[in-house]
Image (cartoon, rainbow, N blue to C red; front, side, top):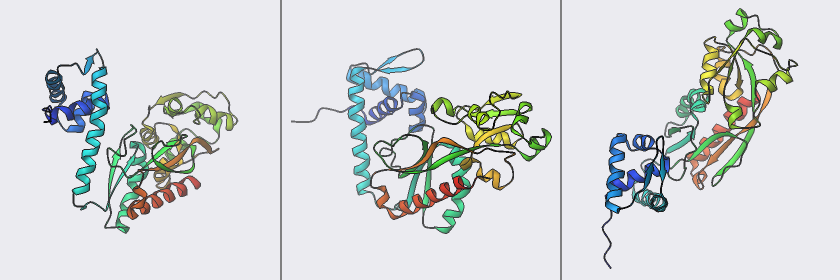
Length: 307
């Protein structure tokens, strides 16, 4: 029996990207086209099929029941197509390692250490996928990644590392200017905060640090919150804006360069651990195993020796 005519591939691809990301804008960025072009392709597909795939709400798209059926089938179909293409493509990029991590980890920890590693291993190539979202490792062909979490990874191989540590940090000039010698001196300081506590219920926050430092209920001069951008809170501390409860891993480069100092203790466990995650089977590639062992050792060494 002959196959029925399929809708245009571009329209199917645009729809699948919108359905997977729940966003026309994100789908457009992924496809390197304009949001208007993506919307047009989705509308053409709806006209071709004669069904509505999305309900257009004021601030978001809501996928319909027929749309969900199509999205589920296309996701698996595109994944099989990628696998088939990879199976026949010459393995010119066999030495390429695709690494996923959050933007703060990429900016503050991985990037400063990557050049020396690659100088030692000139045949390797590393591609970073830096995003706050949890990425589909199979779909994006990600070999391994790093997460700061308290949960086991689902559908991936993973290895737990040590618990992250947090400690108060500020620029040397800020410490001197505000005469920060004891925890109670923070009453005249600006504290730099983030939203880790809203993302992870058990994470150590300023209030926990005050309790451990013997100054429960301390009221600082002011608090500035940087949301999920914890790297920006560290950069703000370097710029002399205040005192941040920084993580040992992200702050280590600034500590080594004496852009930040720890005026007093205590150093506390964060309540989250670093986790190296790997796409199943990726660890069988020697270059991936090499990078994983190097990355794990760098993180472990940093956590074990915060200044």
